[in-house]
Length: 183
Image (tube, rainbow, N blue to C red; front, top):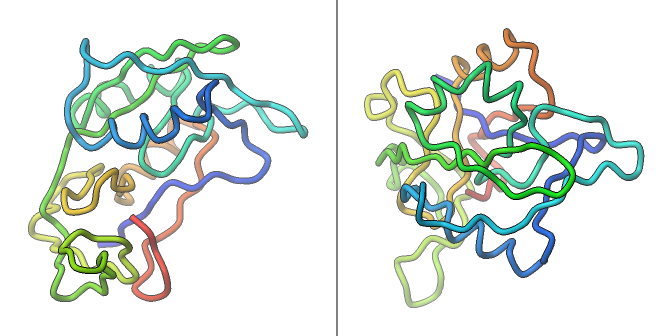
C-alpha cells in the first residue's frame, strides 16, 4: 500500500487567512477534533497573483484541504465519511475547509524514524514513515494522532477518485521511506 500527501504546484491558487496570525489557529484547530458549529473559521482570501490558475483545491497546507463547490459536489459524500466540510468566510471565492476527523493509530513508531523534542515524548518531525496497513484497512483518508496537526494522508483510492472526477489543484507525493518528511 502506498500512502501519499497532497502537494501544491507553484502555479495553483493559494487560500490563506486574511490575518497571518490565523495560520497557527487553523493548524491547531485541524487536529482531528470535529469543529462543526463550534469553530469560527477565520476570514480567508484566495490569491491568484503571479498567473496562478483557478483550481478546485486552492492550497493552504498539507494538514487541511480547501475545496471549491465542484470538488465538494464530486467528493462530498466520500469526504464526509472521513471528516467534515466547514464553510469558510472568503471575500473572493466560495470555498469550504475539509477537516479530517478520521484518526488512525497507523504509524508504526518502532519502525519509523522520529525526532522528538528534547526532554519530551512529543514528536517534532517524522523523517521516515512506517504505517501499519492492517490499521489503515480500506480507509482512503486519515491523520495520525501522535503528531499535532498531522498532514492528511491519502491512499491511491482517493487519488483515483480525485483524478476520475477531473479535479484540479492537488498534486500527490508518496510518503517516502527515507529522507525528511514532516507530518
